Image 1 (cartoon, rainbow, N blue to C red):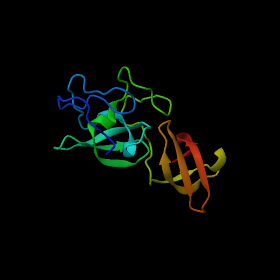
Image 2 (cartoon, rainbow, N blue to C red):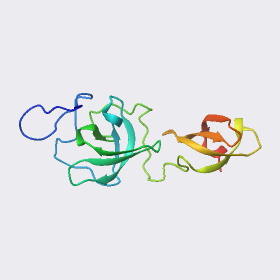
Image 3 (tube, rainbow, N blue to C red):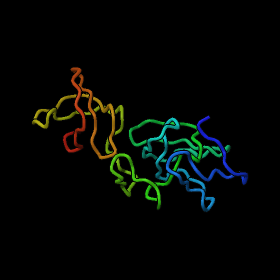
Length: 152
């Protein structure tokens, strides 16, 4: 198991990484809450949103890069912007609105390869938290960290 309980009060008050939790006030997460979670129980925190609150006390998380994870334990989740936590592994920037991403993974798009003037068909293979995208073009070419203004 990736988690072991310390103490006997029944609350998960810590994680093995990061040294803190958001359980201090006993508050649970709600659907739509912006969070960071440790994907797969690993040590790195990734930004996302709570997509489902389960009756067993776990949560489903939709990550900003499009990945989804089900049945995530509360001890592997923390609120974005909460005090005392480490900043995000990708810059700590958090957008305030729910429309952070203009495109999502799998979206069919046209993009200006290399920033040039011609538009090429492709699809979004990854949405980065900084608002850029990885594009897989129909001809097989790939491009990383494409700015949104070069995509339609």
